[in-house]
Image (cartoon, rainbow, N blue to C red):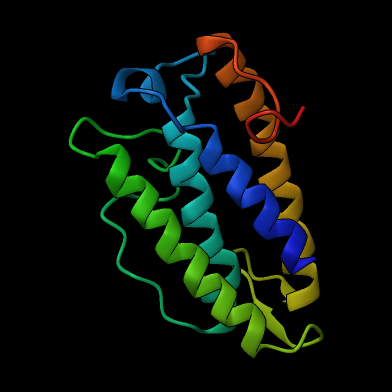
Length: 151
C-alpha cells in the first residue's frame, strides 16, 4: 500500500511539471479547483491523517486547513507548495514506517482509526485528486497520462 501511495504521489507532482505559475494556479472549475491547490490540500491531509492522528508533530500551518487548503494564495509559490508536500510526505513516511498497521489513533473528527485505515484512506484520496489533476492538466495543455509517456 505504501509503495502504491508513493507512486500516486509522484504522479501528482508530475501534473505540475513544465507548467508556469499561472497555469498551476488557473481555476479550471466553477469551484476554483486548480493544480497547485490540490497539492497544498494533499500535503495538509497527509500531515493531518498520518501525523496528527497518531500524536506526531507537524509543522505549523500558515493557513487554515479547514478553509484555505484548496487554493494557493498570491504569496505562496509553486516551489514552496511542492516543498511543503515533500515535508508532509517525509513526515507521513516516517509515521508509516514507525507505526504498526493495527495501531490506532484519534482522527480530527474524534473517530478512532488504525494506521491501515489511514493508509487506505490516503491512497484513495491521493488517487482521487490525481484523477482530478489528470483532467485539469489535459484542459491546460493537452498532456495526459500518469507520467510522461504513460497513459
